[in-house]
Image (cartoon, rainbow, N blue to C red; front, side, top):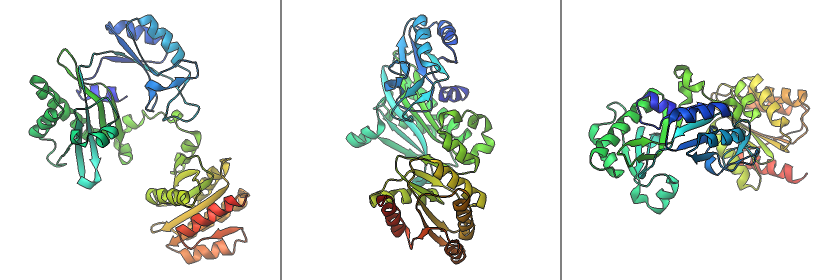
Length: 389
């Protein structure tokens, strides 16, 4: 997907086709007429090269010179689950493979453009040491990481692109070629409302060509209304079913390995809640962000999702009501507890708008709800309720 987007914006990538059957993969390999072919399983997860298929095949990335081998490998990829360090335990079903021209890389560099809040705008980050984990380079060789802020109003200047190309180690005519690619990547970054465009490796070939060999692109969710084609590429079938169900009700849900379910408004507060549960010796079962304009029906659906998880042994509600009305939360909680016949301990911490009315609703409900004074108190009570079992 990232190669297709880059190609659409004039960025140099390998020639490639996407196939959804072994026969199509064979035809694509024959059409490429390449000296060597790379076959890649197409799933939205990293670590594919070291992944394992439930067909027994090892590796989601393979090189071969024989189109017939492409067909054989595709048969062991398409329709099978690929497990990597970034997929769920059972892996993700591969529905498509990319068949691309394999190019020799004489040198690999790293290049990225990302939206940096600290700089109030986009920033270029580059390193002459590419093809490896950039975080590792930052730790072991920080002097090889180059950073350049871009003025959001003026855009990337020619001298900035050239200086970055120079920092990445491109020499002679390749320097200008790399600078041109950098400018095209910035144009793409703006036009598609990206928050990050990471090219690794951003390399050069022995024939003297600068090529974007692989890329990861993240998008601003708030731009979905004007990037419909791009957001339509999102394959929801790769998500956990519970995440898709949560999205129907505008809930942000990510499953974790613990047993204390979190029910929180605001992403920052949700992360802090997960942290404080861990600090008190517990393990969060999920990250769940209700967002701002919460409705009673959302509260009910959130509880339904949390109680459906067999790992959950307690629920911690942590609401800080600014634009959120705590009374709406309280009504949603009591309704959910009654209708779903809640069987696990429930600890509630409410603070903010209409909190006294919310506390009255909870206190008069007759339900076994444990109130907490603050987040620390709530976390300790939630952890203790699980320990008693």
